[in-house]
Length: 217
Ligand code: AP5
Ligand code: ZN
Image (cartoon, rainbow, N blue to C red):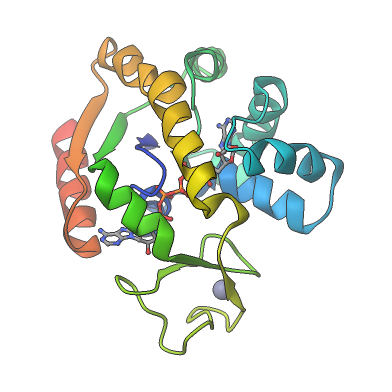
């Protein structure tokens, strides 16, 4: 299966992507996580990406598309993938279509996680992620780690993302509305969008998404 996950910052894309990818046995490809791994590894790409991420802006298409393409061409993504945070504007969506058409494959669904702005602000304010792997995600009240400040998965230190501070979050929401939301109409025109109400327990949202994907078969 080839799935795209969209939704505002803090909607729970990463949280759901980990679960859905496991259930569907496909790799979870998050451009945000790939950038953060490059930042931790202090690569040139990481240095470039950090300046945009800290400002709440999108990293330029050229480098983002090249990085996503490279990841999608890894052997584990041959049978399918779950894209989280990519595409994030119409030109990235067009580039993805071109890539898939070249391989004679298509997307199966675009899951749109729907959640209010008040809720995403609460989720982002309390989010803590792991230094070792930014897909290990917790929340100080909604998804508490067993030991405060310590990752349940690998024992790594939990910290608050640099782009999770209030002014950057506001900018990220603005960028989401102006640049990312238009891809929902782009994919609606292809009949691919399934809207998933994303308020409620994490497991319940996973169940809704899996149910919706079954209907897409
Ligand atoms: P990215 O890392 O993709 O961030 P984002 O889209 O802003 O999304 P988030 O990671 O903030 O939220 P999420 O929806 O994954 O929520 P989560 O599951 O963590 O991108 C960061 C930056 O990288 C961008 O700003 C940009 O600069 C750059 N970038 C990335 N991709 C790019 C691209 N394609 N092009 C250009 N630039 C790009 O959940 C949030 C919190 O809520 C957690 O604490 C979680 O525990 C909690 N939570 C989750 N579900 C629930 C629930 N049901 N109930 C209660 N709490 C919940
Ligand atoms: Zn961890």
